[in-house]
Amino acid sequence: MGGMRTEPGFQRSMFGNDIFSSRFRAEGSTSMQQPLRKAAAIENPLPVGLADLYKGVTKKMKISRETIDASGRISNTEDILTIQVKAGWKKGTRITFPDKGNEAPNMKPADIVFIIDEKPHDVFTREGNDLVVTEKISLVEALTGYTARVTTLDGRSLSLHINSIIHPKYEEVMPGEGMPVPKDPTKKGNLRIKFNIMFPSRLTSDQKAGIKRLLGS
Image (spheres, rainbow, N blue to C red):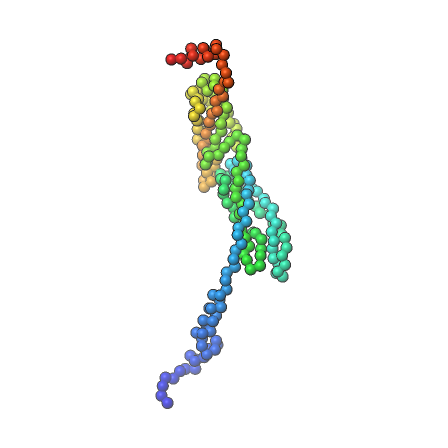
């Protein structure tokens, strides 16, 4: 009888009678495999002193986590994580160690995240990339002159003589003596010197009269 003749090579294949249905089944089974869900990140504060943030420091943190071996048994494993704290890093900077958290069946291990927590300093406070120091001075020093002496976070001694009258909002700025800029540690913020003027609690009549003679219009 007449009709279209089919070559044997196109009628069958190694996948059976229908190559297209076999391909569909293979792709369908692959698409049904769901990716492993990742456990929530484990966050820990990392206290760092201002001097260490000024110079940079290496911290080693010992952690203990649950791991699963080839047989599926869970055990506790200790590990040492090395953190390179860069000069100029700020409070809130996050350092992530991927997949270093606990392992659990059918889940990807959690990330461990350390968050920089800047410890208070006895002398300096930080405002952005600037360092601020407040000097206590007497009223006499505020009116007649004062030499500010500051020891920097890397141990250098700075001095600045001030001849101007120092009022409560007066501020001196020493450029380039602040914190390193994180994106470019060769650059630094400023050192700002503020003043807390200590007024006398009381004056005698003679002292008041003398001040009036000196400062009166």
